[in-house]
Amino acid sequence: MVSVRMMNEELFAKTIKEFNVAGELVRARQEEKQGLLDEFDKECKRFFFGKISRRALQSSVNKTNKELVRLDGEIRQNMAKARNAGTRAMHTISAQAPVAFRATLSGINGGGAGKSKKGKARKKRR
Image (cartoon, rainbow, N blue to C red):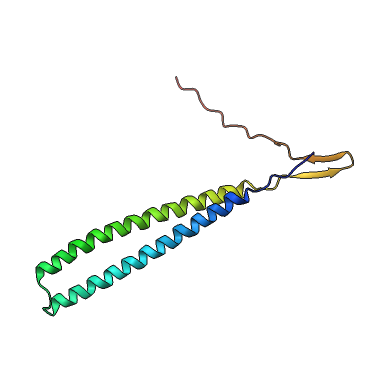
């Protein structure tokens, strides 16, 4: 009996879901980062108009920088997760390349390994 290779749809669906989650987390962290920058901009204006002291602004600078580094790290981490999920999806899709079959009077031909590629001859080192 001849059979066609079927896609593991459960694995593919899980991979796509993981890709979407990672993308959403990147977007959420970017929005969080923008909110942090807007908040810091307000603090700078308050300092400019004399509402808060230089020490208070310096404290805000330190806190903001630490938070920005954390958010950037999370964004990079989620980008890597999305990249890995995309690569996994591509491998799953690539494995679905059609196998050539041919119907003949004597039955079905094909589906075999076909021609194997020969490796490049390497020079021996002395």
